Amino acid sequence: KLCSILGLPLLLLPTFIPGPMGRALLPRLCTALLLAGEVSRYASALEVAAAKAPCNLEPWLAESAAPGEEGFHVICALNRTALQVYRGGVKTPEPMLLRVGKSDLRNVLAASLDIKFGIEYNTTKGLLKWKKQPWTLFGQMGRELQVGSETKFLAAHFKRLPASPLLLLLFEGGAWRWPTIRVGYRREAMAGVFLTTVSRQPALFEVVLDPTATPAKGKKASKLNAALLSNVVELARPRLQASMTEGKVDKKMRSSEQTFLDYGMDPKLKELALATSRLLRGPEENLEALQVLRYTENQHYDAHRDYWDPREFPDVPRFKNQEGYWHMRHATLLWYLSPPDEGGETWFPRAHGGPIPTGDWMACDDRGAKVSPRD
Image (cartoon, rainbow, N blue to C red):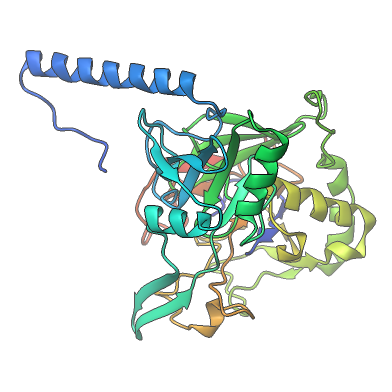
């Protein structure tokens, strides 16, 4: 979703596959003060719970739920058989406490969290169904536990470190997804690589590379840096052609130029692929080819999705991988290579939960959020 303001930047889009909060206004001051007292006591309870929690929960728990994060759960394993579970990645003074046996961890978690094993969409062709890939546990550093190995992993950890609680992250979709926490939340995802939450619905982050950052004790310097992109323009320029959508050129919708670069064609691109997969915390083989776009003055791409909605494309095989599981783009990472002096923002009209901008595909106004290539 790109603005047509003066000149637009050259972009890279490597795509990675794999309760209501508001309250009515209260007419009585005394009731409002009572509500404020309840909120204050609840906040204090959260602080006490966080202080007593044996795991470091601060980077993983939000004050409130966000649509799209219902399938994200934070687990603090107190020992081999006792788990504290924060459903939806939301803070609470009373997390779910689960007891697991020697071999039933997956069954207990699936039943307690009501994890679904399929995906359904009502479409013009009726109800379409897909198998959902198995849910997965990750360590906080991004290590994925193989499905079925979780109980053995817990046993080995507590045998080695019996007094050290273990933090685990459960993703019902089977793939890592950075939690948003709150708008403005900033975390160091990798040494010198910072993510700042721009929007919680849908999840939108600003990625900043800081080559001057010093790695924390015990951490290696990140290999994700701007130098890995230094020859992309040179490689892409002779290959650029009119951009296509669904195999067709439609300049009213998309007037830029594009090409695709294989990560294996250049040593720097190979390193870029590896570093990108580490940032996204997923398999390198799940990366699509590197898409390079060039926008000149007044060129644009209408507001669009980077995934395919099955209600618009009601086709079961299209969204099924070789193993028969649901198959969909999971994340898009944009690199701005040549930002113009003015303009060139990327517009996210639905940021913060806004509606589809029907009929205003090129408005690029104050709805949602705009990300500038110069920041």
